[in-house]
Image (tube, rainbow, N blue to C red):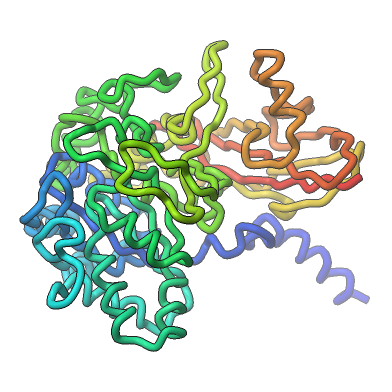
Length: 482
């Protein structure tokens, strides 16, 4: 009797402590990551690498490969990657005081590789192997079922050469299995090898805002990734705060903080155009890497075949994960754009960056750390039309003991339930789900009436009152049945 009574209680208590079942169960496994970077073509790659290293405890970094691009066609700058990692070496011990898992600099330096120093498809084919392309093959051959994420900050031809060689040297079944292990997030097409891979390998998972017309920057203004900070340079309207992606903010919050901060260059064009590729993978409770359409700090994308535009290298031949739009209301103004899928989260990801830079020089007590947003129920639930739904985040804690604020909100775009989206557009207002307690740990609402199964995505934002204020999330997918 005692055993049967105690076990259910322990299981109930564990709900808020153990990883939740459902859609996020796989996200807690560290992603394997290879970065391809045309570093030194402009300052933003170095900026992104500094930020990447602050989150390197969240990834298994398998490679950082220096490459070419349309901006840097016949040289590579692996020396700059090494320089920044050496600065990271000076702060790694301090970072470990705040969170575990930061890799040794020696481990990262062993994984710095060189691509072939030529542009685009000129570097793909017979006798075009490089230590970078050979390393990609070696990583894919590891006996590890996890996907390999290739984050393309410049040209993609080092990956293309690896695939070209595998296709010409491996049995078809083995080759196709290796292709299916790959996940690519590319910052536009900075050479012509990306479109070639998408055409040649239909099973290759690819996130990209397609195209770049040489000597014409028109393609970049349509890139989802420019939502990181690109309003001034690409002249589009945004409801985000531009002051936190500008040089005065960088000098105050990043550059003056220790050896790694000193490696962060001034902004010349936009701040960190490459960072969305790894912000997408950060385990903050918001994103889910296998579902780009769910949205994250790295943006939101949908699976379709983009129509051909004049700035594309060539027509797309099959569905890829590409641009889509979010509707975000700021001070009574509605903004609808691809870039909004990123800039809507800007205060959170910039505060998080500043806090982690503090970790390089401060003790645990002197710095702020993100809250641990937790639910007392699974991340995915099924309810009936009209049923009372209770969302409970009372297990949430904060490692610094800071007071917390809570915000429950309907994320319109990822869900299939369209009535709310239509209502928001037709009535020209920032529609929110009719919810009691939407700024408390426990929120309650009635499931809407549906004639067929639908789903809604509700995001919990938990923000602490530390300095800078830090935010973590939980996503609840509510499946509604008639």
